[in-house]
Length: 574
Image 1 (cartoon, rainbow, N blue to C red):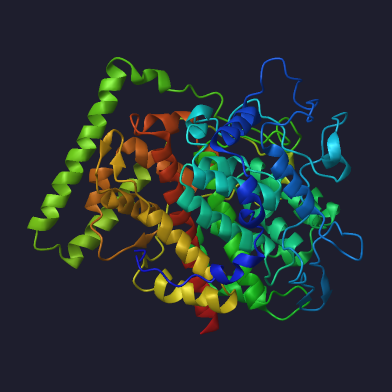
Image 2: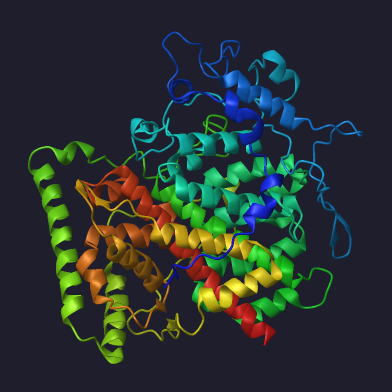
């Protein structure tokens, strides 16, 4: 279970290195009205405006010129060499990496995807190589109405986070827009991802993005693959590597096996897999490099779950390009059930909410009355839930082939998630969470080999696990801790992790079958998520509450995979 104590964050020490607009921009930022106009214009072009790709940028929304000016200033720091377009991360000799100077801004040159042929680049931004994001013809998500995401777009905390992301990376991507429904989590996520990709670490920058491509490709997530192909080139990566995994260095190709296991069956990882990567040789990994690679792999496997679970749409510069497709092959073909809220459908959805509230109340009362359940009974209930999870499978899954631009980064594409235990098969031993915990083992190991990232991961786990607004659908003042714990522990259950002190009978009481189907699909084979699955569970709940579930899934899945990987590292070291 995630502990609720908070450790001292090292982020404060690095805060001055972050590209924060608070000092120079705060007095000039958009007001609430200006920011709302910016978001509306970003997603919904005014009538009569030129089509996307030929839009005249000479008439920006009120206040956007301030952000543009800041972007232009930050994208060209003073340099005696005239400004390089690559991050100084090339390997200089065996085992060493050239680091960027601390005195320089850690922000790479702001440069979005290359414009489409014939697209004009007007104004001073075009001369400086900066492209302002084009408008989208649709919202950030195929599952969530755009107005639901933009409704709270003028909220100050979200506005500040979006502008920080825009100034530092030159874009506010659709993942950030959807995560922005929960600003506290988005802040923690953004800091962690920034450290993984753009701050000092054992791996060169271009290899970090290539590892992200390898991880996203295991789940056929063309959104993340396309995004990091662009990032890979911008930090000086070799374009030939993007022809496929067979063109990458052998050292990166050696990650394929552990990438495959982490993505689909992490319980199969052993110390022998770690030893094979660390053995002395021309293509060997250092322990610090491997730990960073493991964190990157689990981060992007889990982020692919979020992309598919929330139906994230491609950005404008990706939309229609050769490397991108809708978030799921089924998302556009599955009928939405939003119109089923009227009549009997609405009454059924209301009844589901009331039944959930009643079950939570009964469970809380029974916990106060019961003297306690024996360990034997706890173990029996876990095994029962694990066995029942075999029966939880969506009925509308259809096989689909990989896109060629994703398939080239995948070896053994037929390898996928297989239920942790099946009848008639010898099951691997259950991972008892108390034997190897994140708090006592994983956290300290990561912090020792990859300083600071352990603290940020720990903060992120705690933020999402404890995140609550004390609401359920239309009810306020509700203690949701029991429900959050059931979701978290069910994700760990399908990956074979058991908590001795948790009564798995609560899972069956609190999670309806349609919700279990959605959780298992998003966590285990996210590429098969459909809009039908998203709309069929918790039909009377807010979209922000469903996004909250996806955040829990993201972090629970990442922690489960990390525990298996770090346990193998610990066994290798001992």
